[in-house]
Length: 346
Image (cartoon, rainbow, N blue to C red):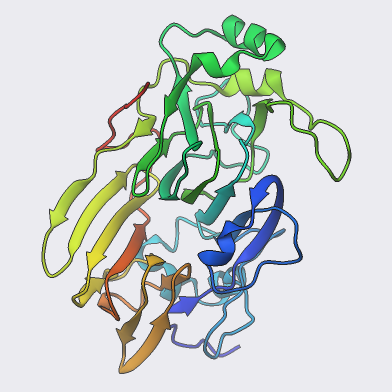
């Protein structure tokens, strides 16, 4: 097959039923939600066999990101091409109408094997919408042990031992692998994570799955084996302002597996970087990407991948814009540190 020069790529969302989900993603993404059930997740960029994102624009429309990785890996990944056989990040929007299970994802240093798919799972959230009952749990209170957690699962007091956050739009929350976490109460977040789908459920708030009429299974032993009982990186982060003009650029997350900036403003801004891929996610407003004499219309809720061959280009807002730009660090050791994290608990 003749290799095609890559261009900015837009992807169709993949909606996921979740018993804790709602219908609020309909106001965030242009693609209609399926049927009338609870939709908890929209996977907006996924290089996974079970849920592979498809390109929605241009000559490559209909191809998956995995096919592009296979056919044009150097163009897509640039300096990172030899490090990754799959695109290493999974990007989602979550609509948590009810509380997610209290869960933990494995890490490289956990006593349990890192993951059933071979990848640890560090992730982070950017709060898009929240309500009066919204709550995020991220990490354990000091002095919490495995025995305390096991007993609290039995007597239903697990939440008493978790760091609790009242989220507001714009908050960033870092969840390194090994962190006990949950969220819910009508909160919508953007999620960036390592490309893994391994989760161990520690507690489920008494939820009953309407499809089965039964509680969901717990994986208490596996979860306890994965928990980092001493790490303090999880929790709310303090943004670092890197530029104020022509638009504000804040760094929210900077760990060894992903970096994320938030961009605001109405003036044209430079996005992307030479010889490495970047992803843009629009959370507010509309605009267009300008590259190679072409323009690409960007709508709220969309994910756009700028292949390494695209390099830097201009994003021109139609009005005030909220834009997330995500990068993959050129070197990676683990996903545990976040250079601008600060715990905030109640």
